[in-house]
Image (cartoon, rainbow, N blue to C red):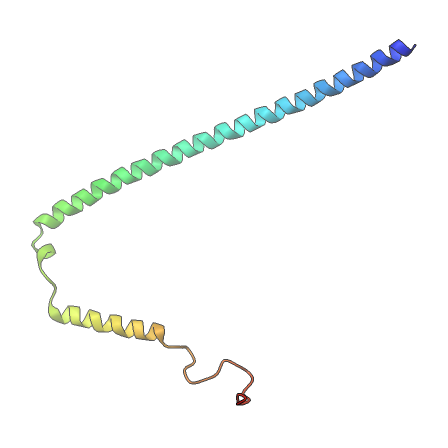
Length: 115
């Protein structure tokens, strides 16, 4: 009787180990599938990035060729235009640096500071 009990317990332990091994195997297969999918997506992204870089280089080369033969590309703009652009830039920079509430306090406490 003891031997049958022991064999039954060993069988249960073996069944539990087989079940655990099956779960590990399923988890590994799922992980492998996820890794495979991620690798495929990464490969596609890298291929598209490389293609865009090549297309960008072709466009840059075309623009260089066009700029080399275009007479307007080599001429300087009129000084009135550059002066106006500089003035506009200076005004925009000054506006960005000015505080929003000039002269006012942000603090709700208007009591004078202690000496």
